[in-house]
Image 1 (cartoon, rainbow, N blue to C red):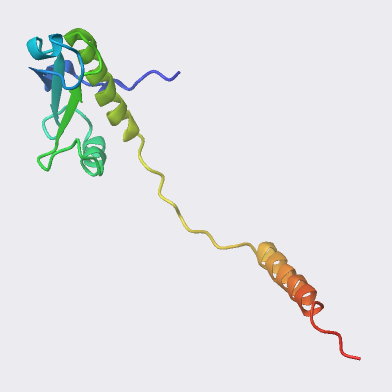
Image 2 (image 1 turned 135 degrees about the vertical axis):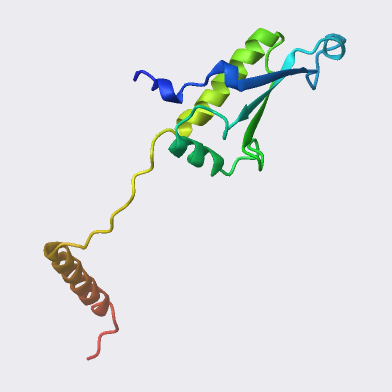
Length: 137
């Protein structure tokens, strides 16, 4: 496993957590305890490199607002601590997905030999198809 680049690691001080009540089944506990967390991470104010910020903002993801704030809701677990760790891990995975700069494709020309092979194959295929016609006597 590759060690993570420190510049691409989420700084916990840049993340804002808000405790909210979880949705769904859970009995009376879900109505009393705010164990779910909403994570807010401002991309423009973060310490990420500029290229990563641009690729993160360019993602077509509904969790990223028009102002460039990543909003994640973590309610998988029953404790705030585990939900906090889950939200941070999901944010880190989102950042890791855009960390690598995309490789720019440079168009190349086909080689002379590949062009020759393609034309020979077309000629061979045309002969095969021509021989399928009706036989005249």
